[in-house]
Image 1 (tube, rainbow, N blue to C red):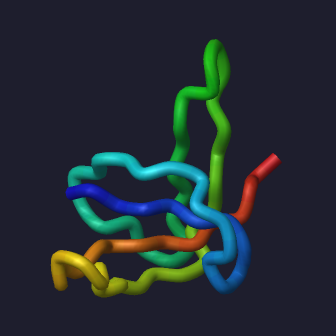
Image 2: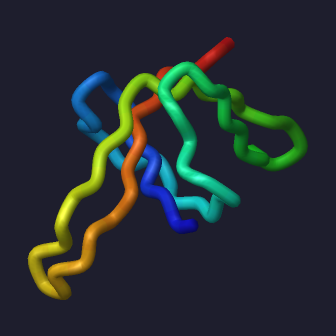
Length: 67
């Protein structure tokens, strides 16, 4: 499942899009390879947004960097 990952409480900035086996849930931790090390993020929000051109719904999560 393709999921768009946003920074900020209100999904202000798109960080990346990734493929996940299932939709991440609030409170879970996700990670990504950052070139030799991993960055870990706590999921703080989940929503779906509708693409204006295609009308398709995209899965989205907001995250907070977990140092």
